[in-house]
Length: 350
Image 1: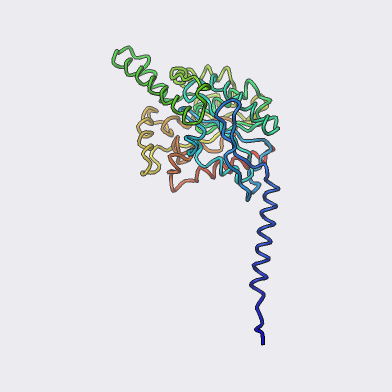
Image 2: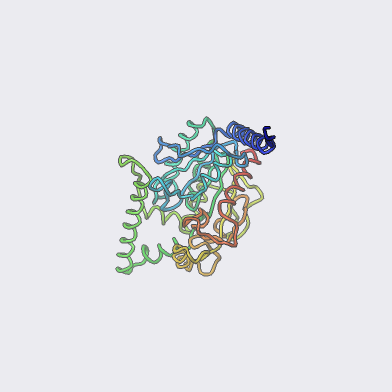
């Protein structure tokens, strides 16, 4: 006699596999455009990878373009993203994501023009007529430049830890090493300028920028753009929904030139004792004379448009999930903040 076979486990497994297959096909078809590109030149954007099992949580109408800050890169040596883990998080939730590469060290006007060329290339690739700009630190100012000179290209601007009203650290560097008449300080300033520009060139090369397309680097252009005094001039030329007073709240209107603005930032210095960069930011944070800051920018300076929060327990690098994700264990994960913001943009129709 043959034993009766219990077919229930086989049937259950078959149903589970079929359901998984249907989920995979559904996810793929729903989010087939979910991609991540990294751009190293105005006409060069390389597809990095693609996820098939995605959600539609971050399926924004327009592509998301991530804009790096001072001394930034897109993808270093083909391995380390400046926005560590952010492109993958957004892309796996249905977004089209591009990381861009502008001069590591220069003014936001110079970098903004470089960024505009890459945005034009992004729109050509995707067929979209606008993009959502997400800029960290100086990248937020670069994004504001684009929103002023080419607002039709911008669906929204999200600034992350951006010095809209200047940086106490830049004020300190200019006063101590550039404007100071002491010979020793002037010499130190020249050495610092040369060293920072050399790092900028290295960042370009390690980001894959072709040698014949290396971007101009200018430490003086950068530092004199981000002082409190220079920021006032920048704000007059490239307006945004900023507070009327230094530490006030933005205006009720959260848009300028038809472009909506969002912002978020932190006020931490040492947030993870295992992160060596925290101790550097604790030192630079002292240049802000007791005002709550993230090591490089104080929270009042970051406010523009709809302020998500300006007091996360995060320092300047935590807000891009660096160094290698070593952020506070008792604060929201930075990747969650990016994911939530992308969903906010999606729900607003951007």
